[in-house]
Image (cartoon, rainbow, N blue to C red; front, side):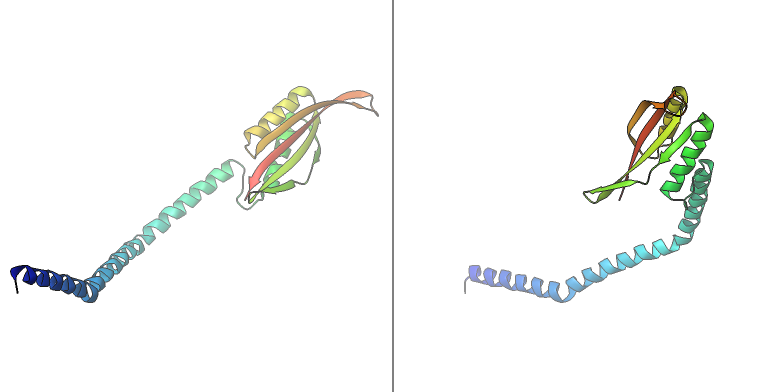
Length: 171
């Protein structure tokens, strides 16, 4: 045998030895190492769970105080919040609510668009203040605000009616 053949056999044997040793020991060692690292991370998270719980409880109290200061409740539905805000603005701006219709729902791309029609009667200034106040509540997007001048047949007076179309997305 020549030195060249001996080197090739040595190189081939060394490669086979490395593959066999990887298969039987290194592979298992690396798998155990990753599982140990995962367990250490889980242990650290469990140790910090008490601190995290206390922080989350304080955050919950803080957020509930914000909701209460804005006259919102986490238990009330969107429609109840809308009705509450509309009623509050009605009193402030001396307007009369003619109708607050049930929402019209349309679905597109997995999201539902709810449209609420609110019809209010009053003088122009108060109607503008009412619609501005409702928009500032950020209960949804104002799709349209239409002012109509109608003749009341009974009183023979002209009245201004404001129709507001409020939209919101819901998943």
